[in-house]
Amino acid sequence: MQTAIVVFPGLNRDRDMIAAVRKISGREPALVWHKDAELPRADVVIIPGGFSYGDYLRAGAIAARSPIMAEIRAAAARGVKVLGVCNGFQILTEAGLLPGVLMRNASLRFVCREVGLKVENADTPFTSGYRRGQVLRCPVAHHDGNYFVDLETLSRIEGNAQVAFRYTEGTNPNGSIHDIAGVLNEKKNVLGMMPHPEDLIEAAHGGTDGRPLFAALLDAVAA
Image (cartoon, rainbow, N blue to C red):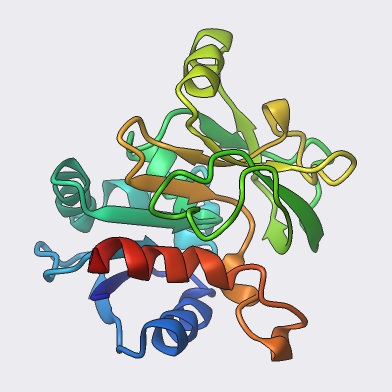
């Protein structure tokens, strides 16, 4: 699996993502600066979490207009797998690669804790390592994770199986509509999610519930 990890000023989870990709794939990911005009050949493009540009305008809004995003849109249109985690999810929605918006948490507070995730669609390149209905543990750390779409869009993404993950009952940390924690595009090759699977890939982390996501991607691009 050849992976490209995009780096924006203000991100703070890129090192975690680099370590996860290196340990699971056995290969060093390519690091892509946000102002680069070209994307190296990659099977998977990942935008990690953090606070790009300090979230000064709106979470992900400035990063979504960086030069590299045009290349990522083109790669996604070709079928390249694109994963955005936390701030990466926000960037993907702001760039129009995923439906919806990420608003301030309903509590108006930063939330950092473990949540339960239910796998809603296990038939994607990202989730095939899980079972539909499987419940996972996963940490979250965000201030703007309240996912929202209008009712027409909500009906469409629910009907088209574009909800990949949902917070389990009582663990929704941000007020997201329908407890949505992760969303796919229509082609199912772009996934955005607020929880951090890269932080649960080995026993030293306290669990390995995030590892099957990366392993599934490895299998998908090797097929």
